[in-house]
Amino acid sequence: MMRAFFTNSPGPLLHVQSASARWIVGALALTLLAWLAVLAGLLAVANRVHDDVPVLLAVKLPLLQSQPELIFAGESRTVYQVDAGLAAQLIGKPQGAAVNIGYDAGEPLALLAAMHREPERFQKAQIVVSVAPFLFNEGVRSAAVYPQDVAARLGVAEQMVSFLPLRVGTLIRFIREAFNARLAADQHIADLGTQPAASGLKVIDHTQEDDRWPADIGSHAHYANWDLSGPKARFEIGALCDMVALTRKLTVVVPPWAPRYDRARDPSWRERDDQYVALIGDAGRRCGFDVLNIQSIPGLEQANYADEMHVNASGVPIYTRYLVSRLSR
View 1 (cartoon, helix red, strand yellow):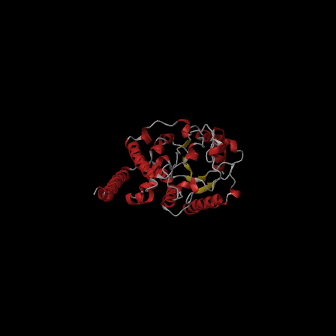
View 2: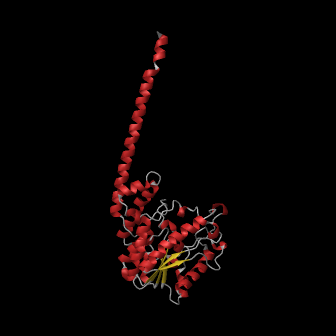
View 3: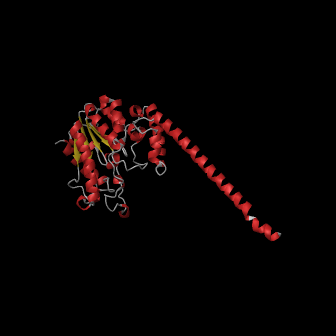
């Protein structure tokens, strides 16, 4: 009898384990659904409070109080490479005649929003906007660089389909930045904030370690999953076109990469780079803005670069002088 009891005992135990597993799976499913509902709610609120002028741009806009004639804007290669004070000297104008309002991952949609908000600050100025592949490549969906104003135009359902589950960080950043932008707008940072030092220039004072440099540019994250047919390209190119009527002159700049990389030996980079430059060039001819595609700069050497994209302190005057010289042609 005892032998029979022990022989049959695993049956009830397995039943209990199976029931427990179902309860665990059910609890996890309910937790996931609850989490998705909360995320959807936060995204809906973020979409409502979102302001197209992000806080990183808003803190730069007090520089426009000087009524500049030359406004450098765009992504990080403006922030860390253009000395607006030197640019003012080069065009024979006083300090304040040129300003740098670029910011990290800066997108055309945000600049367009600032131009609509205070058109008198831009109407008589030449606007010089630097762009990078990640602004147009739909394949790049990382939190650090995905354009926030593009994300705001997708709607909650499309946001969740586009970024879940692997890119949830992009959605979290969007929610955070939406509230930060609204706070900056409510506090009138663009008008009442303090003016940034050095006319908006920031300097990278270090050089990246050799083992952190990409082996090539064709496989760089900015060109990953290459796709120029998505909403990024549509919205950002549209923003560039809309700027033309709001300024004296618009110039879109494609800055160079570090000299250690050779386009001739990197067909993937060359092909993709040519495609996105062609996209911008076609828009320029159609809408009336200039495109300045800079593949190299005389005198700007490898030692002048902090990483594959950005110059260090020694490269700033070289880059600025060359850029201003090209603008004056």
